[in-house]
Amino acid sequence: MNTLVVEPEYHPPVQLPFPDQAVSKLKVALYSHDTMGLGHTRRNLLIAQALTKLNASTLLITGASQSAQFQMPEGVDCLTLPSLHKNGEGSYEAKALELSLEQLIELRSKAIKAALKVFKPDVFIVDNVPWGAENELKRALKLLKKKGRCKLILGLRDILDEAEVSKAQWQKRNYDEAIENYFDSVWVYGDERIFNPVKEYELKPEVARKMRFLGYFDQRARLELSQDPKLHIPKRPFVLCQVGGGQDGFKLAESFVKSHLPKGRHGLLITGPYMPAQELARLKSIAESRSDMSLLTFINEPTYLLQKAERVIAMGGYNTVGEVLSFEKPFLVVPRVKPRLEQLIRAQKMAEHRLLDFLHPDDLTPEALSQWLNAEVHYPEIHGRFQFSALKQICFELKSLMGEKEISYVAA
Image 1: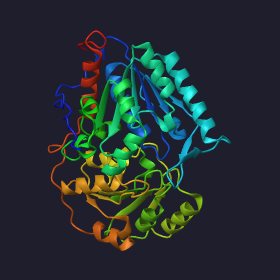
Image 2 (image 1 turned 60 degrees about the horizontal axis):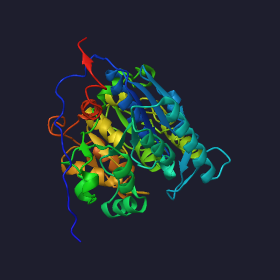
Image 3 (image 1 turned 90 degrees about the horizontal axis):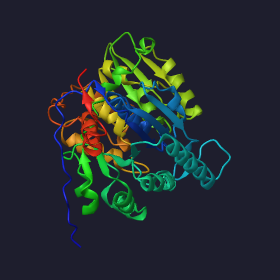
């Protein structure tokens, strides 16, 4: 059966800077379920930082217990939900509390609804999952839709998974119903020239019409809040290795601490807060046996280290890739391939455009990393070729969605 594909509208990046002051106090709530790693919370925190330019009052609703360790922009506060955990099979379970999955979702769902009922947001931005984890947003979406005053926005990363899996999941979870009946707009945080989900996933015209490509995030903006971690920066030029939250990053981390670094260079590994204790102890033992290698378990904002690093080796999560590309660093991606192929597809697509290099995890060895670390690496300039305009586009989209009466600006 042929599927009618409707291309979403694309607005060129706003060239003017953010206004210095907004007349009205816009109230925005952002939700992320955060069941694996910190990427969703960090993405919403970056959006919240941009919303300060609109003088917004912003509530982050997150499932990441580490959210309290992040520096919050002015006018931003956080509601942390009891944590969900995604196990090795990709299924959800309670991370800490002695509750069944059903009980935990009930708790989280009621907490979200209660918070939104009191906060009364003008805009509610949902990250990645229209119904929320395990449908925990259904109550809240129905409440906000019934009230009628709140604009509902779904924010999607560039790539969800391989096409057939994504289409099946989309249909099984009734995402079309959620988008058609509840959401006013769908923001894609990516560049359609790299990956176009409308075409790849054969989305329905009713859904495609609501989609806007905003470009990737220029994550150099994080430096505005990033504290200078002087104690963590090696005195010599250094190579940085990140393995996401760490729960499945041991093989990459171990290969890095065993690799041969270029002469006069230092290696810095960030293991992530979820690295299992036994694996972390093994990595510390190897790193401590070398004078050119150091290890950090967690740093709440690694942006400053990315800015200073000569090269970066990392997994292929959306935030990590966007951050490294924002700084135009030589970059080797070793993508996660389970439980989904999102990171592998992202690495392959971006390698085709000469944005980075990638190594399949099946080919990962200390020797393979050593070869890349000691090779000449050159990429074409990135920012002039692809859109990194999401932060400014969010300002444009909100102004368009809310109208001049809701958001108006005055000169500083």
